[in-house]
Length: 361
Image (cartoon, rainbow, N blue to C red; front, side, top):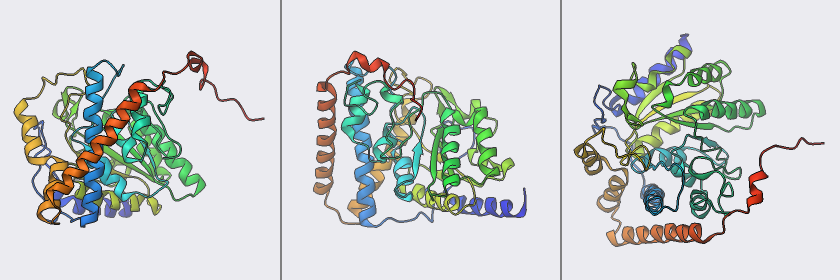
């Protein structure tokens, strides 16, 4: 590693400092409070509360619809991980690109995609973002610069690197926010992507959402190196671990990473230590962990509850106002569910569209 890269990694190691969470063999992260946690303004906390609550209520409703047999195929819920994508979005600017794996509903909503269109895609309706053909894992929005939603573990990392290559080639100042899980971080194409991104100094932020389980396999059982922030060291890519349950620490780390990438210094790795409350998918009973483990995380580290308490105790927001926000969010989600269950199914002719891209004359 050359002097510049050593300096970059040293800066990242210093930045993560006390924000680093437990990295031992434990299945659940030890979320020790960081003494230098950044603070949000009242407006920032209100924004984070609304956006995370929208994801939470949307996913709860999606789970209900799945249980009613109205959503087919796979359905992976983002409940518990909301602070990661909202903190990242708070550090990005309009035009930055987002790409992720199959646990993607939260990322779509964070990018500003219409809840009605997202929910309608889940139920396979004409008004869905992929006109009912993509389902939970495969929807996109060019307008919102959301590039999926990908069902093959780790495949999106190469595509996200390609987005960064296009940005560098066009010199458009954009950054590719490329998300993956801890399971995907062990895939071979991830390291090919790391090498290319650092070789050509591509503006990519690799966000590893470490929720401690790849399906039902704990990180300790699957990874020889459980500190995912160090996965780019051999390529000279700086990285840091972040408390992914606190939207403030996420936004702070994301700001550093995005600035690093946008300024032409190349890629950056953020390991977000987070936790999913539900199973890997709706068909997963999650018997590989105890109820006490999940309850402890909910009770002590819930990202939305942390913001709610701050709004009341630090910012003086009346609890009635927060209940009103929740009611408004629930109304938005209920409207989306109503649309998604009454919108027409796509015409059978849609089976033959979007298969080939016709060459331009």
